[in-house]
Image (cartoon, rainbow, N blue to C red; front, side):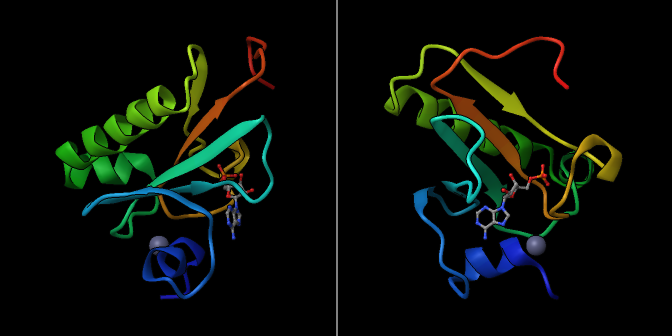
Length: 111
Ligand code: AMP
Ligand code: ZN
């Protein structure tokens, strides 16, 4: 399958990997939107987070757990977790991922 994030998991495309578990991989976003911008992804391919949830609910927990641990380890008191689902919502890579953004204030509502 021609999936960019599957290739990162497989080590076929370089990425700055922050944390790796048996089930998840976290790496720096190539176009950071905040001083900290990390993507946490399942190692197994799913198109989006809803697909992860309907196939393997505990994997959703693993992804959020990794995000929380990275935020703690990075000393982020406040941060934003974001899931874009579908092109109109800003999803551009169709391998499920959770954005962890921190290090600056964030506005609400998002754009
Ligand atoms: P989304 O738009 O929610 O699908 O998020 C996809 C994210 O992947 C974007 O923030 C991109 O900057 C990021 N991205 C795309 N290619 C790479 C790459 N090779 N390494 C790291 N991040 C990437
Ligand atoms: Zn994939």
